[in-house]
Picture 1 (cartoon, rainbow, N blue to C red):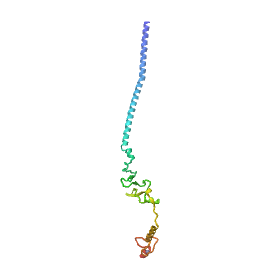
Picture 2 (cartoon, protein in one colour):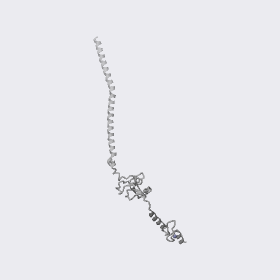
Picture 3 (cartoon, rainbow, N blue to C red):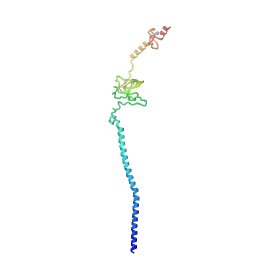
Picture 4 (spheres, protein in one colour):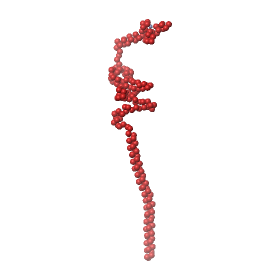
Length: 212
Ligand SMILES: [Zn+2]
């Protein structure tokens, strides 16, 4: 009886020990990967935060570098900072050399060829519309380069232009007289259908007679 109890006691202790061992090995079996896993998770989160920080820092630096040379918005809105800018096309031709709408560089409001605003026309363009400047001052100019020479065309406001004057009868008569005089040969006194060449000073007939 006593011996039996002792045996059972030993078995029981053995059982407990086995259970304990099983429990310990089980928990370590589970907890080890869990520990490694959580460690990894922390590491990844740390790396992520660090990465985010570096990214933000980089973005801030990049933005600062990009905006460092840009004019401020107020400068753009009164666009005074573009006055002296020289813009070249791909062939190295200066495009905006003659862009000076306030006339600070050239005295007159100046535009490059083909870039004058509407309402400003040359005398030729006014004439084509049956208009003349009508005593107004030159409003602006177009500047361009032709074979290294600077060319200018003056512009007038179409709103200040006046209708082209019709020549009076007297003016037409005067023009007719002047033309008749230029057509009349000083040698033979005959009015020719052509103007007498100044180099000869007489009509072709008189000239031919002299040659013969
Ligand atoms: Zn003649």
